[in-house]
Amino acid sequence: MTAGHRLRLQAIEISLEGAPLLRLDAAVGPGEVLTVMGPSGSGKSTLLAYLAGFLAPAFRASGRILLDGSDIGRLPAERRHIGLLFQDPLLFPHLSVAGNLRFGMPRDKVDKGERVEAALAQVGLAGFGPRDPATLSGGQQARVALMRLLLAEPRAVLLDEPFTRLDLPLRHEMRRLVFDRLRQAGLPSLLVTHDPQDAAAAGGPVVDLAGQ
Image (cartoon, rainbow, N blue to C red):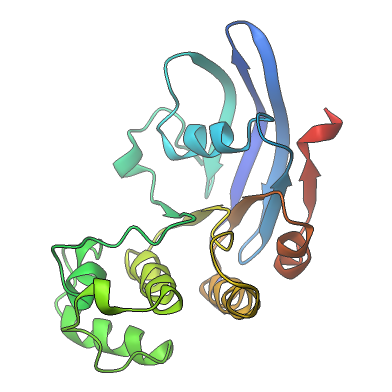
């Protein structure tokens, strides 16, 4: 595993129309997954939106988002170097599988084709580059979405219930794949979920917003 990155959420407070919604103070080390649990309306998705730089104007937030010691809270979303994995793969339908993987890669990479082929081979999809994403199964699309995220070389990752729409056997498989890859890359990650099995598979600390 690489040395990795560190994420520090320092005295984060989010409110809606003056009413406190959530508070969080946590440190996430390289390859560690912090799980944030809570029922609908507890602020899980709002927390992700704040960290990613997409917080809606109706909300107010304070605190510091420190990534490798730098406060990124005032930076636009595209400069935060945070990767996102959602419930749906959200692959671009007008691009091939390879095109999807190349999309987020840093512009200075000169060996993009080789990187794409290696990434596909790592998740059992060797030769799938020319394919239309619509021809892939749900599990294959999820693998492509994961590798697209990793090829973008983020410094931290946010996981928005990424296993919810998968059937049970595939859910177990994708949990192992996602968390193993994040550990290998040394990426601090924050998972929001309502599923205790997700938290158990992540293996890191758990914050329950229901207790606030």
